[in-house]
Image (tube, rainbow, N blue to C red; front, side, top):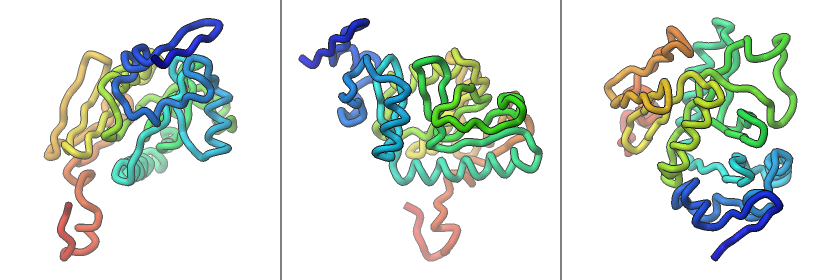
Length: 224
C-alpha cells in the first residue's frame, strides 16, 4: 500500500482517496511526497514545467483542465473583465491565477474577481503566489474533478472569506451558485447568472455563455 511517512504525518492512498476522491492518479504529485509539499514547490513546478498545482494539506494536486474548459474559462474572464474594468471595481484573474487563501493552502480558481480594496495601496501583487482572498471564485468542472475535491474546495473558499462561488458544468450546461457551503441554487441554460452581493449589477445569459462559438461564426457549422 502506498504510504508516506513525514515528521508530522503519515499519508496513505486511503487518506488521499478520502480527501480528494478517486481522481486520476497523475493529478497527485508524488515528488515531493504527499504531505511534505510547500508553496515553494508550487512556484518551482510552474516555473520549471509550466504545470499548475494546488497545495492542500501538504499535497500537490495538479490542475485538471481540458480545451473546452479552458475556452469557457477564457470567455468567463472576458465577460467579467468587460464589466469590472470600465467601472474600476477591481481585478479579474484567470485559470493560472494562483492565490494563497491560508498559509499552506494554495488554490487556483478558473476565474476570480477581487475588489480594489483587496490590494494595498492599489498595487498589483508581484509574487508568484500572492496572499489574498477574492470576493468571487468560479470553477469550470472537468471530467477529472471529483465530488470530494470540489466539496473541500468549496469549504476552503468560504472559510477564507470568499462571498460567492460558481461551479460551471459545461456538459450539463448548468451552474451551481453558492452563497455559503450549504446554500446552492442550480441554474439551467435558460437562466441568467448574476453577481449577487459580490459583484452587484453583473448579469450573464447562460444560453449565450454555453453557445458554441463556431456556430456563431459560421451558420453552416453544426454545434457539437
